[in-house]
Amino acid sequence: MELLALSDNNLKCLPKEIVNLTKLKFTSKKIRLESFPKELCHIANLEITYMQQNLISLIPEERGFLTKSVKLFLAFNNLSSIPPHCQKLAVLDLPHNLLHKLPTGLKSFTEMRISRLPANSLEKIPHQICCLPSLSPVYPRNTQLHTVPGSFTRLTSVRILDLSENCFDEIPKGTCTMKNLEVLALDGSQMQRYLLLCGLVLSIPRFCKI
Image (tube, rainbow, N blue to C red):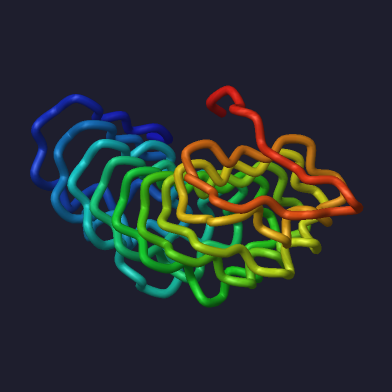
């Protein structure tokens, strides 16, 4: 077996024999899991795709776990952190969790292209995210941000940056020198000041939701 889909069930645990499925792709949307199944930690080549709308608060940090995962979809859970060793991730999708910080080793996630983190409580973006060469869209919407790192200028691949519904009082200076940025969304930030750039006062129109 290569794909196990368990969405829309009421499972509380998985059979121990699942460890014998050495190349498993696992999806379990809306099965109300309260903890991450320990049985999955022992599958060396496991790929987690969709585990959205569960009640998971912790992903085990056992060495070797999730090292093969390319896409991680864990929206609408109760996660406060993610494992630091998911270096193969290309897509990190974690809206509506309880994240306060991202892994300290984030700069080693060199394959990451898309990061979606809306509706968390990050308060700040770690400067390590600016070392990800392939990152294109970034979605830290509604995450209690007050500032963005000045090193955002290194994000030369980013075309879309959604900073809506945060706590900025002016347009973040670090965004104005992102040379390939095409869309900057700052809706709902209740800014009181504008940033003067090149003799022009910039204001941000209301973008369509991204």
